[in-house]
Amino acid sequence: MKLFITGSESFIGRRLRARCKVLGVDAVGIDSVVPSGTVATQVDIRDPAVADLMPEGATVMHLAAISRDPDCRADPRNAFDVNVNGTLNIAAAAEKRNAAQLVFASSEWVYGDVRNDGVQLEDHPIDVTAMKSEYALTKIVGEQCLKLTCRLPGITVLRFGIVYGPRTSNWSAVEALFTAVREKDAVLVGSLATGRRFIHVDDIVAGILKAVGRTGFEIFNLSGDAVITLREVVEKSAELLGRHPPVEEKNPQAFSIRNPDNAKARQVLGWRPEIALGEGLATLLPAPK
Image (tube, rainbow, N blue to C red; front, side):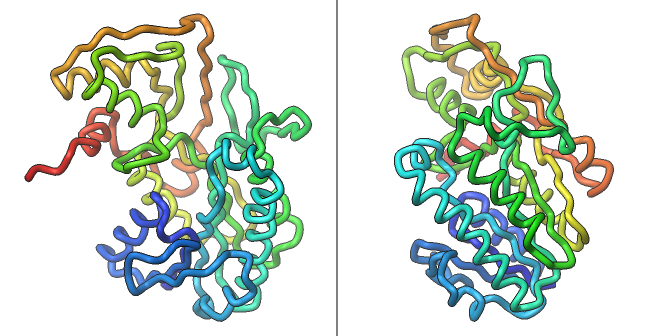
């Protein structure tokens, strides 16, 4: 099995490359930044030269994107160019190189604004006219472009939940709250009742690898097994760190719940998250000297 990873220097990309090395999987990649190793090349995903770098018959893991909503909102033209035209270019390269499969990293945000008591399933219709996130819009357009135009044997869309893990920037609420409990005299949060199906990056990587070998066009939610509230994140962080700073809620009633169900991925891919919140938070601790 050969993997070709776009966004190989990203948070998920680096963890995926590391896991492939452990498993003995042949993986090469590209990224727009200077690579940290010899198995990746610096190139823009919109560059036609991508096809020359892609191994024949590989499984393509398309992780590269402008993924921060503020960046997409600040320059929507560039966001659509990279996230949509870049995806079309990767798909064209994959077809040229007879790729076995294209795995597309999408997001739970494609479900748009949801009800707090709702559950988001892969076959639910999505109203793009109600979307308020430029990033989410680029992702749902990318999904549809692949579905309508790509002629590979397998196109697998993975809608990631809110990913967390050890990193120095672009934090989710999990890393931000953990750091606040560890370092601040007080923790400020919107509403402790806000909840997400947070998922550790290593569980995401496991899900990506479980998706290898699929055929046809399929969509899977890769999310945690249950909704975790911000209260639980704060309390578990305090327990782990042995610090209990006071917590101030800015607007306790203004909470939101997102609940992308992962039953399809568990049943069809044979995957499920293995890293509980406490174990995941422990990976955020500095490495012992």
